[in-house]
Amino acid sequence: MRVLLVEDDKALAQGIRVALRGEGYTLDWLADGLEAGHALDSERFDLVLLDLGLPRKDGLSLLRALRSKAQGDVPVLVLTARDATGDRIQGLDSGADDYLVKPFDVDELKARIRALLRRSQGRAQPLLEHAGVSLDPAGRKVHFRGNPVALTPMEFQLLHQLLARPGAVLTRERLAEALYGWQESGPGNTLEVLIHNLRRKLDNTLIRTVRGVGYLIEAPR
Ligand code: CA
Image (tube, rainbow, N blue to C red; front, top):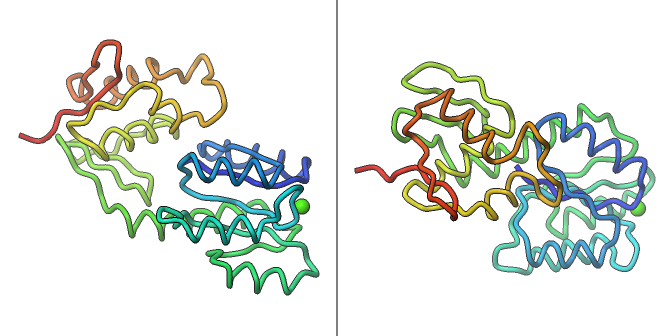
């Protein structure tokens, strides 16, 4: 799950980054409204955490611009100041899915994010089942031939990407964008290592390497 955090309070942003990365989300952070607008125009995110008071372009303008686009239905959770009741109402009126008042508890943030993702994933994607593997995107669970399989958050994300498009070759670039966002991969979670782990935990023949291009899961026959 790729989350965009738009927040100009550095300390708050840092706290949210640490908390969400610990949950296995890919978190990209921008502190500038204009840059956030460009990112929302050109890249895909599964969820946006949006502060309203931002340099160069305010959060409400960003939200309205996003909702006016054809593919602009990504869930948005607005982060507002305690005394700004008007902001909350305007935020919801402008298309926010939910809001949190600062300062908030990080566990509450995590719960709200899970609820929003469940809603959007449930709409977009039920259980993915293929070649003996079943993956529940909302519940974040994987079974292989009926048995539960324990995957790390990164392994889960990678399998989710591949299972969502059986028969399609997913390029290394595309997978890296979905898995790491703008961060570098670490030594223990390069694409090769994650693929190796999935083959080991599931079936060695499940994921095919397309040399020089990427990976795929064969389409059902
Ligand atoms: Ca702010």
